[in-house]
Image 1 (tube, rainbow, N blue to C red):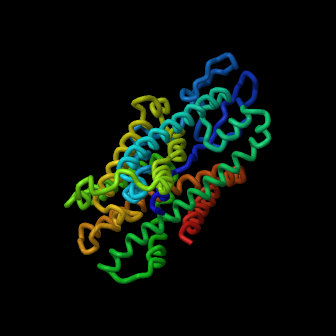
Image 2: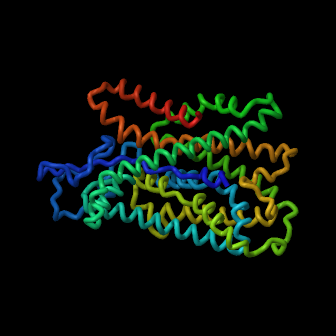
Image 3: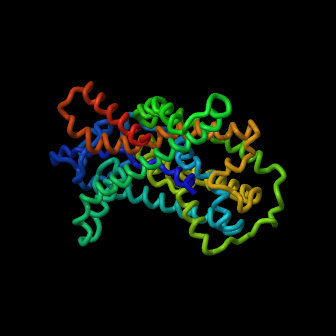
Amino acid sequence: MTSCLIDFKMTDNIKLTNLVDKSNGGARGDVESNDSRMTSPSKQPLDDSTPYDPHKHRVLEHATTNNETLIHLLKGSLGTGILAMPNAFVNSGLVIGTVGTILIGILCTYCLHVLVRSQYELCKKKRVPILNYPDSMRVALQQGPPCLRFAANASAIIVDMFLIVYQLGICCVYIMFVATNIKPVTDAYIAVMDVRIVMVLLLLPLIGINSIRNLKLLAPFSQLANVITFIGLGITMYYICQALPPVSSRPYFGDPRNWNLFIGTTLFALEAVGVVIALENNMKTPASFGGYYGVLNQGMFAIVIMYVIMGFLGYVKYGSAAQGSVTLNLPKEDILAQSVNAIFAVAIFISYGLQCYVPVEIIWSRYLKQHLENATPGKKLLVEYIMRVSVVLVTCK
């Protein structure tokens, strides 16, 4: 079950920037600027009667294209969670598992559309080009019922703390997953080592990948991780489809008392609110994210289909013996099967940078950077990299 939680999803990290209303001599809205990399392209003063489209006023220094965003979305949702789907079907049965996964996927996608659209409307009201996840919470409470407005300022900090703890937890599990999957390979072909030694050996590579400072530079790594993941899934499906038992040999409906376990596994594997908001906020053409044929629907459609196929066929193959990661069911004496562990270890290692990007950006942009306004660029860079190394050390501890 643990592996379904690892997918976890990269969280919103794009900072908020105000538009300056020169006609009024002040900043639009009551939110604070956290990112000097984003400015309004318009030099004309805006007044309250001027229609405001946040998408047209969003300029990012390292904006991602539609394809790069789709790559990140697939990597953020396609990870070790898909390997847990056969085990999830153990708790649901074939029919409930198939229908339930599709319904949960539709529900997640719909909720993400609602969230993205709500952020867009809040940006229009505040006349700012972008709102990140914590500030969206704060502004929503400020605009909401009077009885909830007292919690507006505290809500942003609470969301930040939850996101940081959640993402650091994901990074910890990623390191453990990589180390435990590399260990059988090193034991067989190099030397028998304690898993903690393997984690220490991973330390420098993890620091290196965590030193990448923007999503655009991470895109090639995400593409590589996607390719590696698909290769691993292809090999896994090859073993699953060999001597596949008849579908009728597995129950169509599982014990209703275990359906909650299926829902929890599938929901955590599919839910990607953090990565979705972060990716939409960092797009060059954010209007292309939503819509019937937008980036979100394209990505989620492919993800849900792959989850259903893996869960259905994996459960038909292994039945109630399906483990938390289906790779553990593969024949251990087969070299090709052993390579699957190494393949997914490399893919998850690459994904570590994507997951760690979130807490690093929150800590740096919202809590450290503001205290270094008078520091030299060199000192700022030094402090940032010290913080990045510290985050890696915390997740490896």
